[in-house]
Image 1 (spheres, one colour):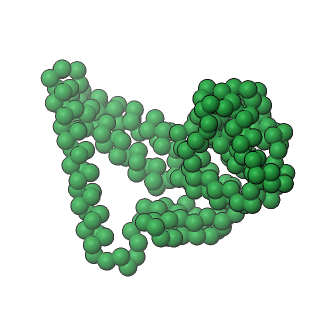
Image 2 (cartoon, one colour):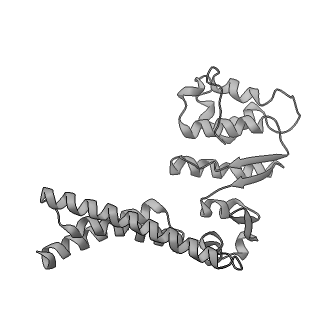
Image 3 (cartoon, rainbow, N blue to C red):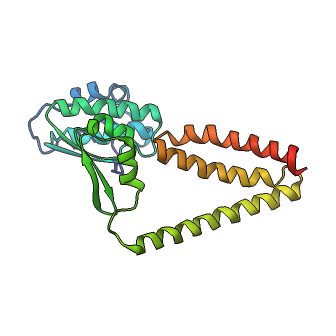
Length: 238
């Protein structure tokens, strides 16, 4: 987590820092470069010049250089480009194949299910669902993440309603501000600002319900709602 590379060292020197204890095992510089070929091309590059994805690969490689029995990975996909995430997750089976146990904390459900032998969903510090990926459905996982825990009492429902009302109020204020601004500029009407905000909420619902990629959902929902707002303005509000 956090990568924490040594900025004064180059990429290869950062990897060698992980081997200081001299523990025997399958992981060497050559093995790490075989796992992440892009690192071999930049072995002499200063650590601070590497991209975010390359730095993440170096952090993983440095940990592997210690030849650990257990490798802990906390949200290794956070803030990285999709192609980089794909390459990193493609390397995990090779790490596991060499006898290293992996514990991965990940919010990308699809990625986690694809590589895990067993998954655990945590809600407010409690295990709300566990099992093998092939035995769990998307609906079960969605309920484990976003559902209200049974037996938690009436206060949970009160908190949910209050938080929903506060969030709805923020949406309403933002939408009203957009409407006022657009009305003053005489560019678009009330339908545009309000429906774009509504689109963001609908995209969130789609993501949570179907487990879709958030960016893909926004690309579909926001233009559709903008077109609907334009149609309402031209056909009804005017």
